[in-house]
Image (tube, rainbow, N blue to C red; front, side, top):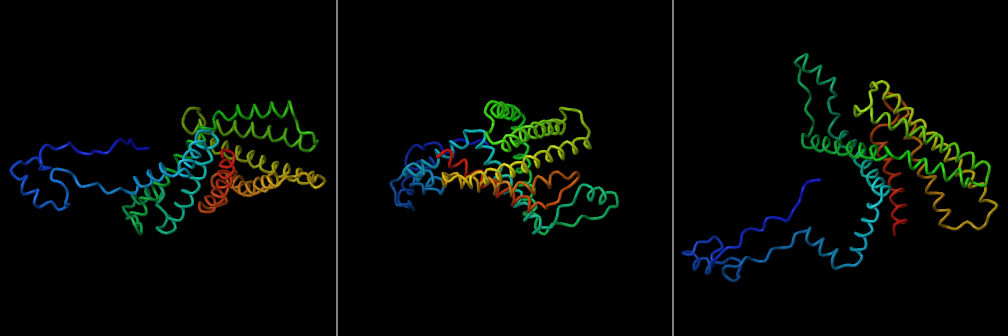
Length: 303
């Protein structure tokens, strides 16, 4: 984020002439194009940004929305959900730009072109290629920050495990599913932490080992999603004989099943070593859909 401060407003001038030339003050007074009092600046036209700030200040709804966004960002989960949505939107957008402008040359292509002294095909639009590169860098930064923020997620899983142990679900099948989900999430988070720290040269594992760690962590994440489908199916079965289900509970069930339908193909895609099954656009669209569902949920929670 760029540093920002109050814009330079200029130094107040002395005398009638705003340029400080006393001899020209009378001429300036007669030829004032703004029809204003000599020696005074014409009123500044409000910019779009200032109009936006005035709208927020004067309208209660604008202030309420600003406070609501701040409540979402004040929590770790809220920040993660907004960053997740932003990252996947950027992924889909950069994929579209790449299709419009043609794929960027890979490092192997650049090496081959240098060795054979051949020219590299220029992009259709250098400006689009520049925008694509910058958006990819921003998307990669968001992804790295989100994974870094999950390094201590193992403590949250430990707290979840303690809650499941102390107050397990009464239904036998839901209880077994909960135990299994805790188990696969502990392994998933541990493998991801080791892979991430190795990627940043903190732990000393080779690139091949890192690829295996990333793939296996996503396989355990995929196992969690599969178990969550089983949990939701069991809840649906139990509710068939119970007529006290509220609309809010039913809506939450459909939100969770829709979210899992987005994550299931993504976890399988990332479980494949040295590549995946989906292209960038499909990955970005599925992640965006899951992100929208998550942001809507946390927006309602912080209302």
